[in-house]
Length: 307
Ligand code: CP
Ligand code: NVA
Image 1: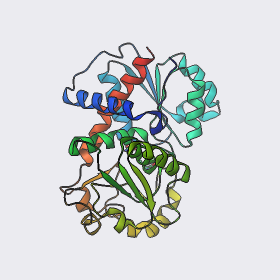
Image 2: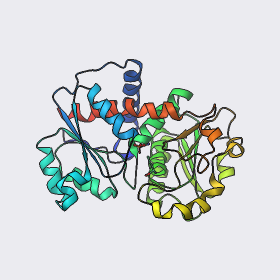
Image 3: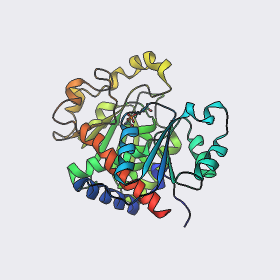
Image 4: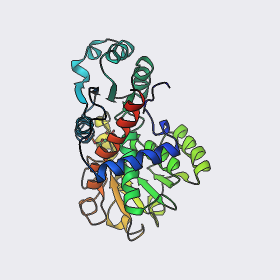
């Protein structure tokens, strides 16, 4: 069988998602180092900063018995103009997998197409699928299942929102994304999420009305207003997004036991009020921890299949 990449949440089917989450839960319950990927090396290429993704992948790789090779975009010849395709061809001769954080999704697709080893999207401008896996695990741990679950994402229609729309659809949830006008998720992703949701019993909706979208939600999710690469828009976005802050007033419209998620890093007082992020409904530290467990399950699945 050919190699599998994980470039988008769409890279996994509903049954595969269940297998991955089950394995992640099992690995979380019994966190012991294994040698399942003994002798393998995974390159981690980061063209943007990272705390959680970088450290959790590094630890995941080590707990699976493999070696991680952290590389920044600038220290590779890639930063001096070597093509993505040549980088993919060459690295494939050395390593057994690549975890890549970059800008355009096309960079990941070109790398995956020229590589003979699995490529994992560790965040692109379009998607953040490893985050969405951890989000689903966190929801399933606390709610037991995705059935009848409504998740409302409030804020920017960005990479995190895109992967959540797809992940929620695959899991059979109802996902509502509430953004200021002009900051909606891209229509192709919304359409794809709606197509998937039609088969799984979920739903994918987009609105500009955050208070209505949050009403009776089981999960309230937010992310930064200016993503990496949008720093020059930060001041303008602060004004535009101000009515979309997840604060106690907005959260009070959700179910009383609704959980609050944020992929982190958070800006208290901007997209989320400090008392919400640090309050009793927040599940963000479990959510961050779950990155490790889902990524262990993901790497085992992708790299063992290619053994
Ligand atoms: N949530 C997330 O991906 O965080 P980092 O940018 O720190 O990796
Ligand atoms: N949307 C954010 C997520 C950071 C984990 C960004 O791309 O910067």
